[in-house]
Image 1 (spheres, rainbow, N blue to C red):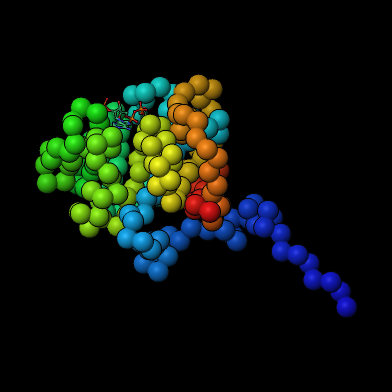
Image 2 (image 1 turned 30 degrees about the vertical axis):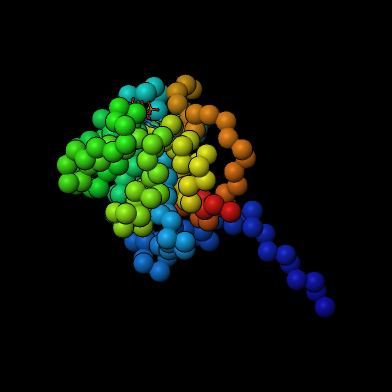
Length: 206
Ligand SMILES: NC(=O)c1ccc[n+]([C@@H]2O[C@H](COP(=O)([O-])OP(=O)(O)OC[C@H]3O[C@@H](n4cnc5c(N)ncnc54)[C@H](OP(=O)(O)O)[C@@H]3O)[C@@H](O)[C@H]2O)c1
């Protein structure tokens, strides 16, 4: 009898037919809140050389329309967006219709700016408790690097959607901006989004 071929996981990584993100994130596929802790999902666009911006203040207008479409879907699937003060300044308009928490040290605890917008200092306010009080179950973490690092080092990053655009900056800001203990993620899906080869990678905490 012929021995069974072992299933090769690495082979699947290169086969976009085998690995795909669900288009409309159906409810059954949306991560559930197991311990009533908010599920935190980072959405990132980066270049081939791992940069998310050329400099602080560089707007994300270099991403593909397919990435923008994907980002809106992820945002739609979340109750609240979390963003650093500088990134918020750049994305204020598109975020105006969403619940937004802006991390800043300029307030002691929290400050409600409007029905949808709260400034929060995570040094003095536990974001997870804050989110529970608001009945938020899914947060979309929108960066920049300090915010991604904050969620990573506090073990709050449950999922990462990384769009790799086929561009090179050769300089700029990385996804995270400080060392952390090694964290493990598992690749859940990879999808080619367009003819240029923009890749959407979906990682989950392992
Ligand atoms: N490609 C992408 O996916 C992507 C995603 C996001 C951002 N970006 C880019 O990244 C750049 C912005 O990143 P950035 O690092 O300069 O700024 P940022 O992370 O957006 O904002 C930094 C600010 O957030 C506040 N903050 C950060 N960590 C905090 C903490 N632990 N506690 C309290 N407040 C905290 C501080 O605000 P205060 O100074 O008010 O205290 C800090 O100055 C932009 O160019 C943007 O386009 C790219």
